[in-house]
Image (cartoon, rainbow, N blue to C red; front, top):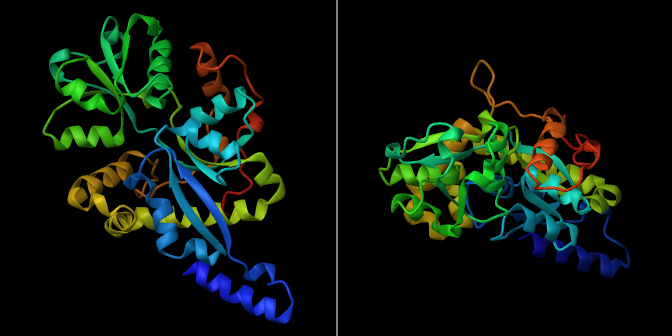
Length: 328
């Protein structure tokens, strides 16, 4: 639809030998999610479906990586996409590697990451993990980084646990007792519960402020096209608010973007409802509180990652994020 409308305007302009007015142009932008289609990306799906991007003159193309936040950021830095999405640990790593990306919007302000184990393993606190096997997706995965930080914050050496890099097989590894525990993001926790399995949980948010989820832009985009960044952030914020206030509709919209998930709609709904419960701070009336990037303790987060060797140099904190695009 957007492509047809744009071409019609271009044809009229060519006939009259004039350039279409800037405010009437539809601007194509691409945003990369850190993983395959998930209900967790509902703010973007809703912003697209409800016309919030179109209202800002944007035609937003949603793409996906299978390799997590860092791949999204690298694609962003290489200008293969215009925006990225992922965890705050990603921008800290990126800056330590001189990758020119900046956090411009905090979308999820409570970190939904956990260390999960069967009750019979008696793992209730970080100290109980010593000498145990922990399944994680991979060495650079967010949950692996957070687990190392949690152990360090508890005064423990993460080398005293055995990380088992199980890729997408982390849940089977736990269920089949191939490991003692697994690191998990909220969808994995919901899937395990849906399987009827009870688990003990260590919430990483009890030990570190790391794990919040952001929209990223590259520095050149911010410098040369700040209005595009502002429009994208404002429209996505509207999509976020719509997806929170209309959770059932949000899942129906998600299924338009990922029809293959229709057979597991109940699971998708459970994942998004769990995010609504656990992913946001709330006021006294139970309404989500949207927070600015500056309200995180970026200095402490960077120090924690430096202390466990995830990064080998520190970056000035003010280079990691900006608040200037957050809607008033």
